Image (cartoon, rainbow, N blue to C red; front, side, top):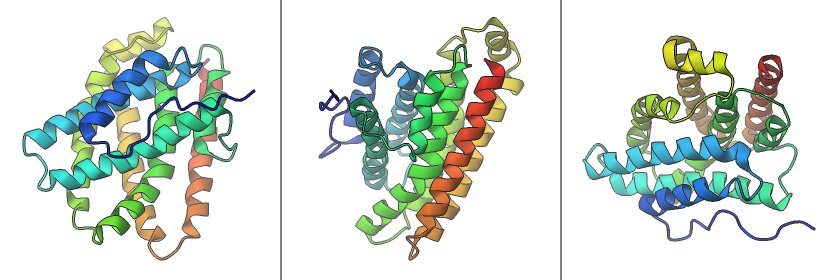
Length: 233
């Protein structure tokens, strides 16, 4: 029988502070919900969200209220993926489904679970979330503020990689002592995905068929990451 309960709460009436609290709660329950393969991505999401919240409070953004609204809109796609995975209703065509395939690969490097999740959330979800957000807010002037999140991502990367150990001693050595071979390629890949996601958002404006191209590309990237996981396991 499929589980019908929600592992992640509804984002209705949430703020960025609420999102952070929910991500921290999920850090403690993902393992018990048979979703440990989401653990590193969720933990990393919490680190980034904490830094975004701090930046909002410190005046980093010109329109923090819109950043707050976007954070809630965007995380909804991730929470939906968690709930659908938990229920067993996640479509095989979703790039999030590749997280389940990753979990079946013995001894795969942990950082690849982060990249597979980032691919689904950035290459697939971000263009759609941007379109939804702009349609609700009637203009896209606030996108300048959203672009500034890339700097926060780069700053978060160091904290994220320092917060976990790779089970494989070789990969853990790379992570600790050869950061340019471990951290930088992953972070610059994520930043490039954000650039492409913004372009895809522009393509989505007035062209709903572009979603097919977005889905195809994100799934192609996920399959490549899974091949790498098999090679490195």
